[in-house]
Image (cartoon, rainbow, N blue to C red; front, side, top):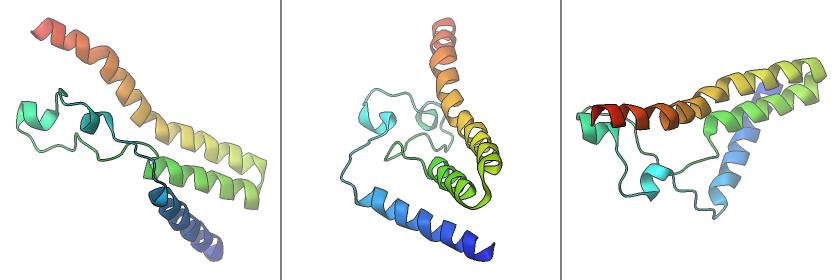
Length: 112
């Protein structure tokens, strides 16, 4: 188990370095567009509301690598369980964007 965990860690490092070496410019929308309303600017609160890059996310990529290791070393049932975990832990980022896209325009319409 220790060796498998070590192989998982080394694989994640290699994949991340490969991702960094690709010359794909994936600027996040907050860095790409100039007229973006940021929480830190609107409220004055320090918030992480800007990112230099977009996907691939580190957490999502690590969950996918973990799922692939579960398929390789433990079989289909643990793979399906870890894939469900990947979906559950990736949904907050996706749903946060969807909720923001649906609710914030209405809130701004009502407030302003």
